[in-house]
Each structure stands twice: as structure tokens, then as C-alpha cells.
Length: 140
Image 1 (cartoon, rainbow, N blue to C red):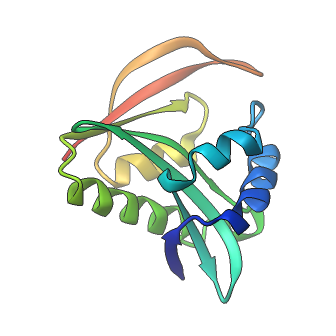
Image 2 (image 1 turned 90 degrees about the vertical axis):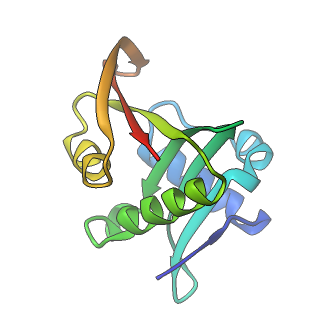
């Protein structure tokens, strides 16, 4: 598996994955504006998933991570997380935060595996369906 920076050619496939995975997907115009913040996982030229890490000064935010359903539970999200954290450390980020649906046990387990700790809850953060978000943080 190869993890690389996203490119123009990835925008449509990232957009399709957004629509398949999330109830409030990013439009392709938004993906275009954030392209330099995205990483893509691929194997033999086949798109497997992507992740987005934003930062301001020394504060990071994992904004999204998604894997093509047929490739889940095969280490793709773990590889994307590992590379995101490596790049976060390289940028000298002090910490990274994220929000995750309270019901998303698989994502929470992934984040905990990488050292994230639940630090709070945002009531009714998600709208479709309405659900709380768990705020998780990793101090780098």
C-alpha cells in the first residue's frame, strides 16, 4: 500500500467516497480547496481511501478519514492514520483533535489504538442523523 499526497485526479473519487460514507459529504469544490491537506491510500493504482489533516500554528485537526467499503478492515485506515501522525509530528504539532460519531465504535477503536483520548462530547453535533460527537485528542 502506498500513501501519498492527494492530486487533482483524486478529487472525483474522493467526492464519490464522501457521498458513499457521510450523510453531509464535502462537495468537490471544497475538496479542491483542501487538496494540499489530503492524503490518499492506494494499492497498484487502485484508490483505497483518504484522510484530511488541517493545522493552524501547532494545533492539528483530523477532519476526515474514509476507506472504500470493499477495502475496510484491511489496514488502510490504520496506514492513513500512521502517516497523518508522522506528518503531524514532522510539522511539530502539539496535539491533534477530532470529532467522531458517538456510535462509530470502529473509528473510536482506531483512534484509541493510535493514542487518542476522549476529552469531551458535543451534543447533537451531527445532523443526519442527529447524534453526539466524541471529541478526542492526541498530544504529540
